[in-house]
Amino acid sequence: MSFEITWLGQGGYLFNLGDKVLCIDPYLSNSMYNNGKYNRLLPIPIEPRELKADMIICTHDHIDHLDEATISKTNMNDILYAGPDSCQQHFRDIGIPVENIISLNRGETYELGQANIHGVFAKHTQDSIGVVIDYRDARIYLTGDSLYDERLLEVKDLSPNILICCINGRLGNMTFKEAAQLAISLDVEIAIPSHYGLIAENTEDPSKFFECLKGTSILGMELEHGVSVKIP
Image 1 (tube, one colour):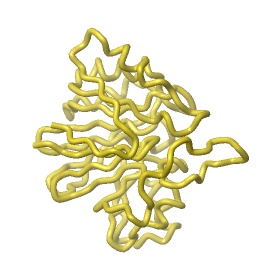
Image 2: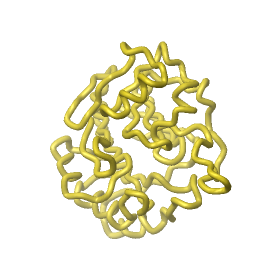
Image 3: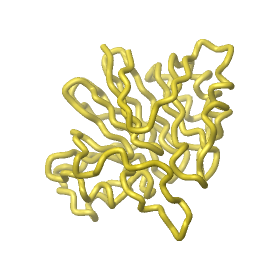
């Protein structure tokens, strides 16, 4: 059974999982702009008010992953908002109803329709998480922001076959070489580079990541900003 994925830019994604839509880390504003620095290089692919999702997960409380300018304009009465403790507090501060806030810390799981959503370790902030989406035959591991750490390999217990991994190599994230090594160590079938191309001060060339995968059985896949792709 296939699923559909749309890259929203930076570390943000939409996953169409049958009768449910999951959104992770949407950054749909230019909140990071600071006197000529951290300006968006790409247009906003969808306005926050038009974001159709059953659940939004924020992996940690940094502005390009939990963006108040984005979250506050989504339909806060109908969408579930999940994340680690620090994100939950920010959700409450924004004004999201308490009944719509879901705990997703490391080691916690939430059932969303036909998918099981797992919070896993990430080495970035004190309680940042990665996410594993278990949907039919697909087990998608999205690292979120993370430095390389041997504890990332603990997701082997969940048998991921698709990896979505940061490659930018700065500001608390692993390099493209480390990301490729993670893909090889986890023996995934598909590896998708993430967290590049949106901010000039914090990007990387994904071709370097794909070069590191040459000679392996791993399919390196580059997503196009704002374009939905069906993954078999």
